[in-house]
Length: 337
Ligand code: FAQ
Image (cartoon, rainbow, N blue to C red; front, top):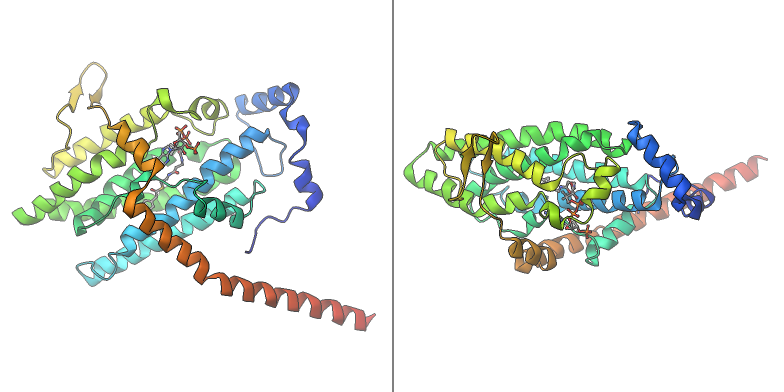
């Protein structure tokens, strides 16, 4: 597979230098982070910092690519030509985000082939939200409004992540996600203000997608294993619960404006906190979808696996061509000398 990683073997060996885990180095690295320095690809960094970034960035990339599937299923069924065009453009954006993120993660010394292998063997995750089916057109509106909406709230702070290539990638990704969120809200608004049947379709979809979209922010702070270290390293700027709360506070008025009801009987404005109180999430569902994506997860992975298998001959042909071209160049330079 093509790689954007141009490092030599010696440079790659240097990444495994045990000195990068010494107390002295960790303190100096933390001082750089505390001073607001941006870490770049060639900078020395602790193994844990590199590892957690590859984990997060590759999972993020996998989510963008797997996330194309529920929407892809709706291209032929989108109600108008205009909706089809918008949907195709959005799905292409998601592909771009995935490729952008894989390239960003490759700057940390892990190849795209390794990351994809980790996804296919179940070592790497992708967002649980994509293990829920999208059986109605309203779901496509909901994906834009809620899923992209949650993605933006989560990703805007990542534009200030301490790792430069990730932070820069996020600036463009967030601009595009913002368009996606608006087109989703527009679909849902049209349904909510349409016939009683259309409004019911929107409400039924909101009932199913609301809680899974809140789960996109990860486990509660008390169960989040990476948060405290990653906030310290300024990879994450806010905790999972803080971002989830921010999303709820922004989204509830949007639902009220179009006459839809958030399916949470405990949802109530808290004047004192200046925020919404909300019901408890079903964490057993969250952990069980992480562990086993069910039939939907198996279908998503089968499509992904087939894409990798079906594209193999193209990658092999491109590599054979590159090899032939390089051999021809060597022969030419030899005959010239
Ligand atoms: N699903 O210790 P934490 C999108 C895992 S992009 C699955 O709190 P962390 C665009 C977590 O990985 C959506 N797994 O972890 C789009 C860890 O397991 P590990 C993706 C989850 O990293 C829209 C374990 O639980 N966005 O939607 C989930 O500090 C429409 C413990 O968790 C990103 O990836 C989950 N929901 O915080 C595309 C944003 N939550 O890795 C198409 C970047 C947690 O040790 C259509 N990522 N886990 O095996 C992040 O901000 C973070 O990684 C979090 C999790 C917030 C997701």
